[in-house]
Image 1 (tube, rainbow, N blue to C red):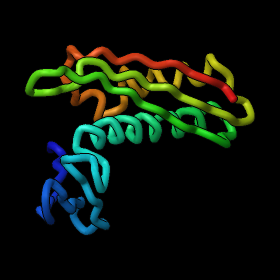
Image 2 (image 1 turned 90 degrees about the vertical axis):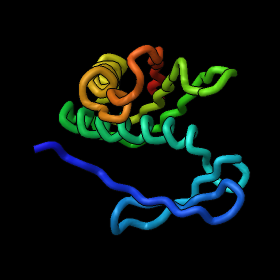
Image 3 (image 1 turned 180 degrees about the vertical axis):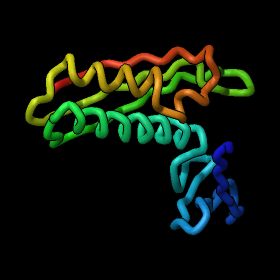
Image 4 (image 1 turned 45 degrees about the vertical axis):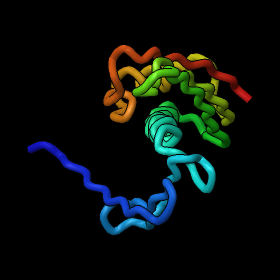
Length: 135
């Protein structure tokens, strides 16, 4: 049976909306990026958080004692409408006992190529890239 997800959003004012998953705290989303994160930025945030979750689980299985995981994401968008992303670059910063570039790259590769449902849901022509810094 297919899994489903549901969210709701409610217009507040201007291009500001309050949204949430069923039974979860609401978050503010701002189409103008003035008062909150924009929908396009939310997509990057969702991709970052999705891959971060995978990387944490995979590194734990590799017996890495994670201390820091930070991911900066840069999305490149078209100038013309629809201003969709054409490229997304992730920068992973990791620190933890047992963390090395081989383990971290393996975890990131598995996430971006196999496990992260958000990245897998993006258009296939979006260039996905990443780099890693071990702190």
